[in-house]
Image 1 (cartoon, one colour):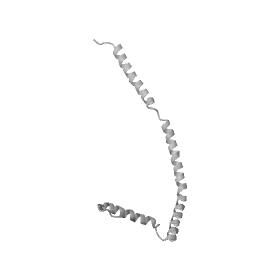
Image 2: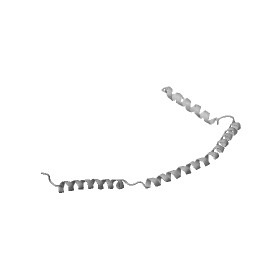
Image 3: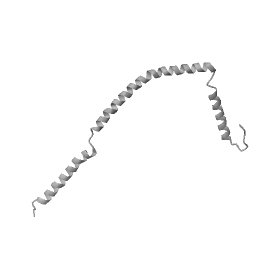
Image 4: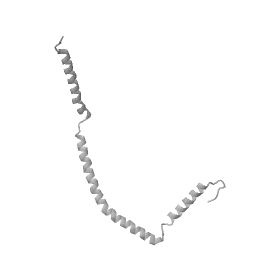
Length: 110
């Protein structure tokens, strides 16, 4: 890296951090074959854990799907807004009709 006379401190710090990260990643994490063997052992151990975990996750997913389908069936049986509004509208019209009939055909008391 060449130093530019007007280079500020934050750029130098950033370049140093990038260089260190590059060196860390290019080193491969350690001692050649020994590092590879250790990493391979860790990967195999994690794969064994995943082999145990995946069937349990699959059973959980199946159970959740059953519950979702059950909820979907229940929601499809709910009445629509129109089905809820229509009886209320009929009730209001009936009350107005009764009020009109009462006022129209009532016996005057004077």
